Image (cartoon, rainbow, N blue to C red):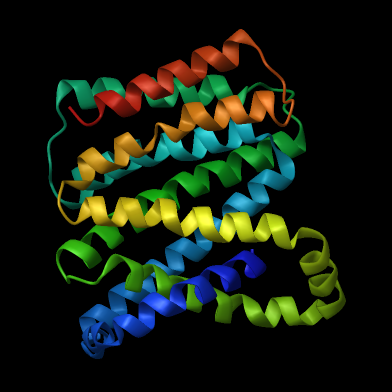
Length: 252
């Protein structure tokens, strides 16, 4: 995680130097605070996702994490912003919850690893919902440039994780030597995909962006089955279909 974050930070540097004046916005206390909160939830997201992948399958972890996020966002708006839910949104939350339970394979004899994977995946969904709302405010209300916001997040994550990484320099060297290509791929694709989300949120409501982002649920399921040779069954496919319909309905 630290390795690909460092690579992303380095890739951002040319753009940062071209827009160095944009950093004047961070002199405002409110802007600095919202960026720190964004950093916190992004960091928690990556940690929870990393832990979830240690115990569960991609075709289960990612759909649960991403499917729960839109529902949590709508519930948060209901409780915190005094918004009202439409009937399609109520139905969408029901579909997402049903799909999550079905996909998670909840049963009395669940293994310890299964429970851990599901728990971390649900935490991921909560952190995604939180940082989505926060980042929407950052780029649309405080007018922070998307690539500047993500650069600050990556720099912060690099600094926060550095003490942990430096405790085992040998492991860091081995990881860098064996997996630098994989880290580079993540270091490029991860910020590129999120930058598109940030730019979209500057111009259209987050209630539309967040559900459309969940098309990745179907993609992650297919990748897990066909590239990682994970278990395939009709129950899992039905769960994905329920969650996918739910995230589409939630934007209506």
